[in-house]
Length: 126
Image 1: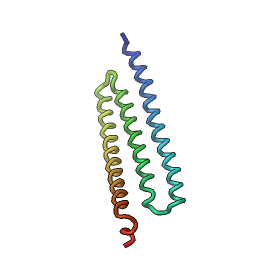
Image 2: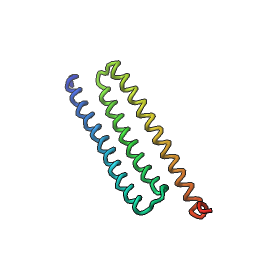
Image 3: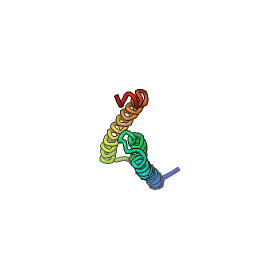
Image 4: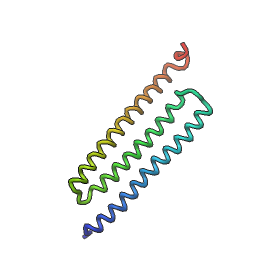
């Protein structure tokens, strides 16, 4: 049988791993987004060309936030106090709101891309 101290230590290691994964996801998304931004800015100076770059970055940020929320859930899963549960609820609410608005922006941007691809460049110039 696993004692409580061992369980806390194991969960602590898991939390560190998941937080590390979240940091790597956010960092890699930012680096990739920066390089994609540079390429698009040099090749195509239209602001509309940056929309896919923003969408890619937003997806990576949303994924990183999901991993951070998972780490918070793990941290609170072992003998939580009311204070820890309250903090988790606040953090979860903030991250859920961030994810909601990121997702909403991704959908809006995707709809704009689909609409502009359907109308084509001829419709935009008239």
